[in-house]
Length: 138
Image (cartoon, rainbow, N blue to C red; front, side, top):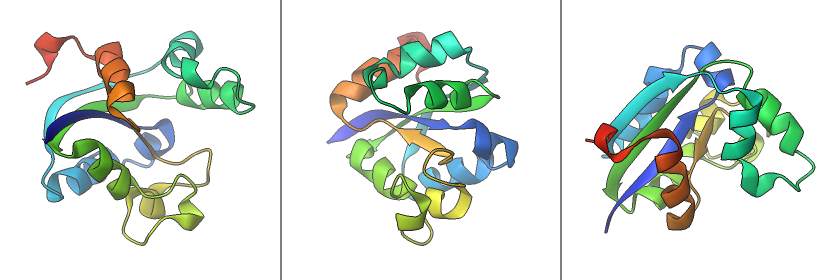
């Protein structure tokens, strides 16, 4: 089934100049970039995006991190895109990530883990329109 999912190249990976390398990982796996932009979230915007985690102990650190610098946001499309993106990203903790995954290559630690990817169709349904109106998705 062809799906769309959201991925974010987080501030740590942008600072490392790894945006192109991250996108290449997705494209080399047969996913298509349907939308792409760079922006700098405010702490309030990051808080709205990660609202699902607002009761978690890491919420404040996460929103602070996500607003510390620019991010690259992209919509990826392809068969089973959500599961494929999550596999390409690797485990949240880069120490547990399989060799060659994005997090194994570019993440610093469990908090500064280089990329975000929607974890379900429901999440993708909220996350994609948070950043992209339908007219910007091709």
